[in-house]
Image (cartoon, rainbow, N blue to C red; front, side):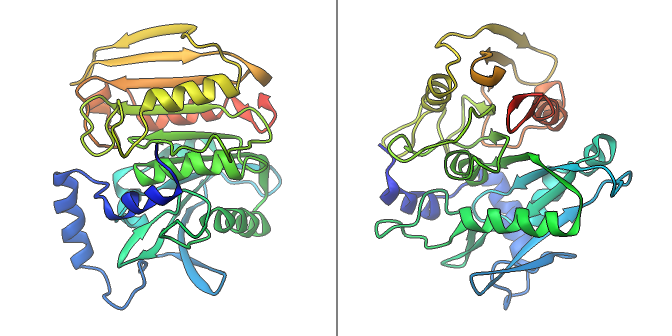
Length: 306
């Protein structure tokens, strides 16, 4: 079982594939060595608990201050930087088309590497970063500067960022409408996970992921574990209500949707056959992951189906 103590493994484990490790290694060489896991070009600063936390913001070109805009947070993986993740998982054109405010926050430093503390702080947790409260403060910061629809705040993330998405669904559900996880997994939260409303969840995960295996292992919970947890919590039923197979990309993709359940929410799973530890591109899937994420989010607000 992945307990609070095993967050140690999240932080110490490499959350990127060997290819991405080489990419990030080159990018990290170009960082300011004096920066505390930051130095993102064009970043905004939020001082949270005495620590300057960076975030990148993209306001849609059609933003109208008289109309409340949704927010989408997109979270990098362990060892990543916001500006690199933005380049890798770029949703800015989609933001302009759909009218949501897009945020790429920066994880704080732990032993020299950016990370998200995707469990509650405690004595058996190696990280003491108050990331759940940081996100709440960041929502306040954005809403103080822009006209934001606070019933439409969405979070997605890659790898450790996907873990953080699940954490926010568990611990900040009073502010989060829906979440997405890409090549991430859910820690063992059942004893303390207490969402205040049904949570729509969308998952993309490869069956050949060697970092966070699809079927889990002695260190990491499986993707079926997360599916079962949210299917039970949202009263979606334990079998898919619809299935489909996509074969137009370089990988076969098996799609399952569960529900609708409480508040008409659903859970969507995209199982990427032989997919590895990636934020999957259109060539791999045969369709746009970013657009699919937004289309899922756009169906819901914090009260369920819109």
